[in-house]
Amino acid sequence: MIITCEKCRTKYKIADDLLGKPELKVRCHKCSHRFIVYRAAHAEDSFLLQDEVHPDYSRVIAISNQKGGVAKTTTTLNLGAALAKMGKRVLLIDFDVQANLTILLGFRKTRSFYEVLTGGVKNIGEAVVKTKYANLSLLPSSSKMALLKKKYLSQHNFEYLLRDKLRTIQDSYDHVLIDTPPSIEFFTLNALVAANMVIVPSTCEYLSMHGVSQIHDIINVLKKSINQEVECKVLITMYDERNTSEKVICDKLRQTYRDNLFRTVIGKDDKMQESHIVNAPISHYAEKSSASLQYMQLAQEIVG
Image (cartoon, rainbow, N blue to C red):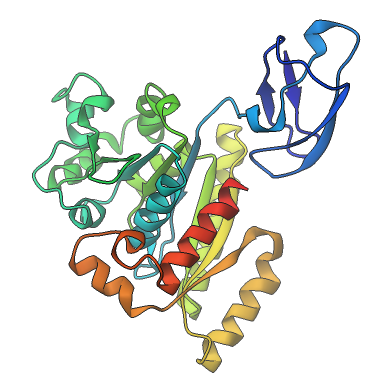
């Protein structure tokens, strides 16, 4: 049968043969709401144990902000690596023509979403490559991706291209993370439509904060047009608590977004830049560094 979270209304499929006590406390994987499920008199009204409760979709997360230089790619890579270290099956999607995520993982001249749409590969799974890190795969980007915007932007329902292709493989992953360019256009719209969660990285500066509000406005419009619930949360990045102006803007972000702000804050860390130079996630380059621990904390916050 199916049980439904009392708070966010997410539905969970359960198996009839997994019976236990007359009642059990469970936690929603999506919103972390805890509630009690009671076993009814009929077998079809049984429930699943907490550790066996899974949503009937993969968590697809777009990392987006119209402002550049706010650690979108850094967050995609290091959050993905942290989730993979927790044993989650993770797919990273580089949806930026600059292909920085692809380069950081040491790939060049690979197939990308361009080949998926133009017939260079039979399906999206053939374009996915395994990284050298356990549980971490990548759908790379390439310079050819720039041609997609010109070809498909004027077509009806172009914003559903990624979502429709991704549905054929996303059940193979626990989390799909999509890195987006610093603009609202073909690639970002496809990522937002495909996602059921959006992380908006923001540094503590005015223009970045303005980009956060723009993403929130766009997501609210998308919710109505595609009739899909999308969770949107702000992540403070590259934070320097010694800087007075950053502390002021950080407080402003907390006041404005409250429950839609991650508790985890990613601070400035020189080890992060070093990890980029050696093409490695921070958790594999400097596991005990503050940034590594913070991204692991963020992963735990997302998983609950």
